[in-house]
Length: 419
Image 1 (cartoon, rainbow, N blue to C red):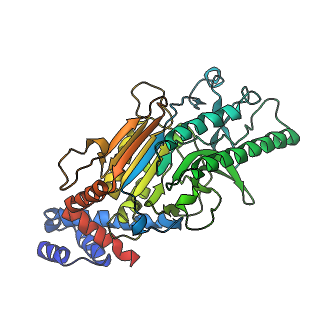
Image 2: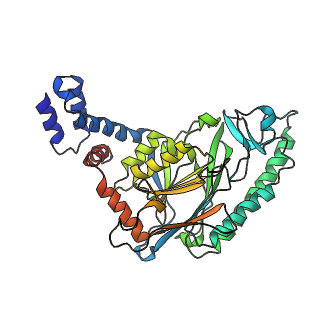
Image 3: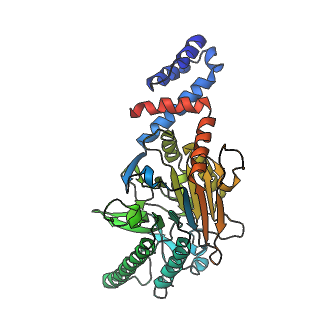
């Protein structure tokens, strides 16, 4: 069996069916299988990568078509991490939770969600909440960024607690929700006015919020708001996009309604193909595998830049962003809104698994200008990163060439189902 086993895998492997031949042969468990495990490991991984599209599948949404004549010499990114610690987590004692403006609660449709704490509900200053974010956005826009990313839960809180004592009646609920809706509309208009003043194309992730969509039943979602300015668009501006988180962060109490779609939207823009994975979505192995399956430079659904807004200081998520950047061979932008302790990382940018500012000078041939990042004076929440396009293209090409032959073969096998 050993010789047959090796001869099968050494043929040009272009069909997924061949890996099942190998797995069937391995299942016979002859001695030869134990001395030729490399091809079997590739086959098993190829099966997992190929199966990822049964759980998640990338879907493009066109904002504007790339135009070679309009390519920018560099991509400027602004990350906004407000260093928040304002959500009382479920594991905290009740008397501690009451100190926080936001907390978790049971929700219609099932699950836990960030809401305004009832002790703060009437006093909660939504205007101030908005102004802090508009001021940070204004400061970021001074640097003419092409991408601006806030953190998870940085959009306006939009859910009423159900466990208030005494409970609100329907009229009281409607009055509050109507007021909140007007605030959100005004906030969106302010955001749009700010970015429309700029002539450089802008893709803005303005944070996410928990809310319900009623499609016959209440569907609890974590929804991000995406804005573009007119310089980004080919046609009349559509309304702000809503981008839903795929899975729940169960460890911290988030339980979203079941997502009935397997698609993960990404956005085709004149800057790049931009994806958004909200917090724990970037930690989901099935999502990472699907992104990896589409990571070859010629792949139609390859995401070039991936935003990971979070409210999570865990190093584990940051390492997942590094792995995601390596597996996808793309730029991954991690933005953490929750910075409870000194030394917690608020933002990081990776290219090909390497922190942007750690690429050693001279590693790329004929590249004179390397990326840089600065913290904005007078606005410590805002950091600006500039990536020269020439550096970016050559860094991605270098990582692509340095992939092992096993990975190249794995991707070739896994890609067969999509043809």
